Length: 277
Picture (cartoon, rainbow, N blue to C red):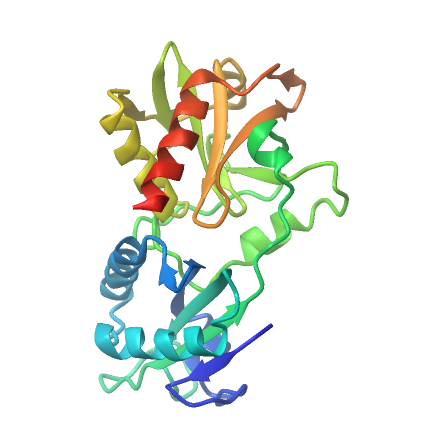
């Protein structure tokens, strides 16, 4: 199942000189579509808006994007849930890194089938490894979901079995930042901690949602740096992602968590209620 719209037209090719292809000059959002509605759409748009500002890419018209999303939904109306990916590039340009003042932004919308994640990942947890590929630090790019994902591509391809469901990425100095496709949270003494993302990493929309839900439950959330040792000393660990929501971690390296923690379970339940609104 795949629908493709490029600048509002049904086609599957872009110009060779598009800077998204030439230089990875753009941004993207991967969004969960449930029952005809994008979950966390406002949060996705907020991150895209911030990313466009950071990269000096003209922000597409929101109403135009929403109308194009509606077209994608009409083509997939028989699907209860699926994925919509939005890509925004700086558009076509001349050779060279410098971009011109006149930018004709390219909009790409695609739909994809919902991933076949086993339910036990939610109920029993997942097995996580550390990746050898490290993350580069850059304040200008930190937090945004830009198209330069080679670090995540290399990290995810360090394993090709079902033994692990996710890999955690670190800085060169050894601080844990996030997963290849997720953000990580640690619970210690009923307080939640998550790595700060001022130098690298992606500020996930589900990360933001979970922080807000935690505060609603009266649980404090703090940002801090983690080494591997500090992370493994937590009472609970869990991952977040806009598609799968919250996955408890049951094994990381040689550390095993015997059951889903109470704080993690409360957040999972609260997220279900939030999605039903």
